[in-house]
Length: 72
Image (cartoon, helix red, strand yellow):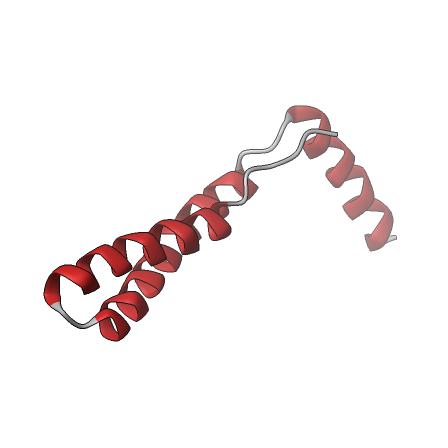
């Protein structure tokens, strides 16, 4: 099984890094670090949703079979 990229973790890390940089430049690390984390998570969510929607054809077929069994 392939490992899937973790966009949420990447968003947190990049947001914290950019927030810390802007916080040092602006002179208020606390506010900018929080803003960076929020923006990093906000940008990571659409990537995670898009990744779930684009599955492989084999997985899609398997999920259809499982859904059909649950309905019976």
